[in-house]
Image: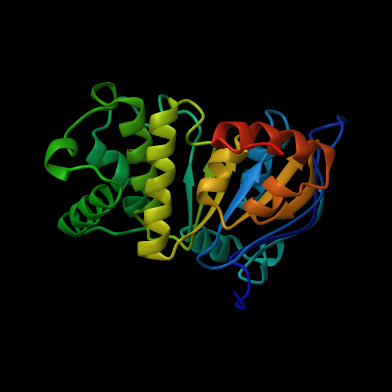
Length: 260
């Protein structure tokens, strides 16, 4: 992957008020077509990192680059134009969708915001995205969130993140509130979408076993620092940092690996 990263964080620091930094010198790159896992426990800084990467939070120090362009040097117009190339999938499937809007209205909202006025074109794009995430437009376009299961809600949230055809999707623990079967199903859906669309993903999770199933590369976040990066199989077999070793031991048990 020789092209410049879609998203890159260089020595990024972020704190809130006088408290200890939430992010401490983070270095991270997501290349075109790559799925990068961001693995760490609650409170490690995963959500903050995604918000920083999306340009929704300013950094205290360091740089956030979108395809090599420094976010802080962009004009507001250029930043808004570039942000359409980033999709976002929130953690909670029950808070992610406005309760008073149908699936069609929810998924088409980014198209409206970015000035696509043709109603038929919006509906066609929404239908294509629903089909891409495994939902039948005929069955789901007119449904409201209370008529959807947790897994269906997350698929709708994923369709909304994809509707602008972004270069990178930031996914904030999208499987954490689903049961294991639905977690695996959603992860496999993301893997299929990456193969079909070539979209990059930055996928935050506390579960190294799920990250190993999906990701090309994993960054382990602990206490706001990336303590180790590498291919999932490499981290599972030969972790170097003690925190990664603890995650890897748990993941190996979940994956049914035999310890030697």
